[in-house]
Image 1 (cartoon, rainbow, N blue to C red):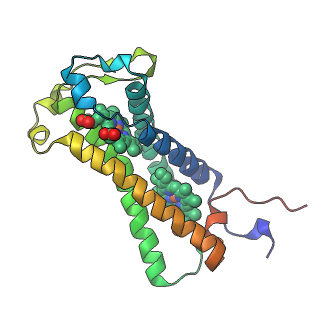
Image 2: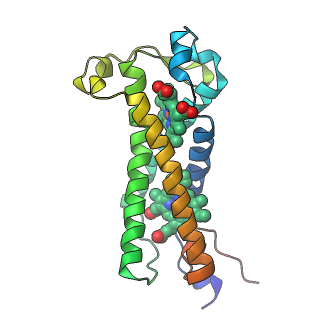
Image 3: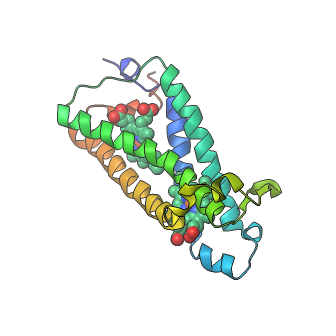
Length: 189
Ligand code: HEM
Ligand code: HEM
């Protein structure tokens, strides 16, 4: 079997995967520590580039994830690589958890801002000062959404780390072509 005939994720699935992985990592690095203290000091978050970039990249992740899920529903199929059923099940579970976190992170962020009456501040001077639908809802009072968001932000990085370690293990030890399936096909001369 030459490289070209090995099963691969389609180009769009690969592009969504790697762009999301890079943007999530940058958003995590820019996670605004001490946000509550800054707000209590009356600092406008629009004046803080880490906050503006973090929130803009986070919203980009939400948009990418929704588009990507639409593509998952429409795409022709994914590579079926033979493996032990416990491995297949663990990979499925990890994917479901990653998908859930990709959606839960922006949602808990909006719940944080809405319930604490802080503005959403995005690149290009875009801002939403009030989110009355969230502020007036019962869900706003259910939790300290800032703490939940921070916990989930840490969780996605731990899980993505494990998921990446599993991909590298498959590549070098099991040698079943899973990682290559998520990379562009090698050109054969
Ligand atoms: C995958 C996307 C995201 C990741 C991985 C992420 C990660 C994080 C992390 C780790 C923190 C805690 C930082 C620290 O305390 O050192 C944080 C805080 C925060 N993030 Fe995100 N975030 C994401 C998306 C978003 C979005 C979409 C928004 C805005 C709409 C947002 C707004 C905030 C705010 C306001 C805080 C401060 C929360 C508080 O302390 O009360 N984040 N984020
Ligand atoms: C924040 C970082 C990451 C997130 C959120 C993430 C998320 C995901 C998701 C949701 C899938 C399923 C994709 C689909 O069905 O189209 C997937 C597949 C995959 N990811 Fe990641 N990923 C991340 C980082 C990485 C890294 C760093 C690697 C490699 C070192 C990697 C390797 C793979 C591979 C090989 C697959 C295909 C697995 C299979 O078919 O069972 N991912 N990833």
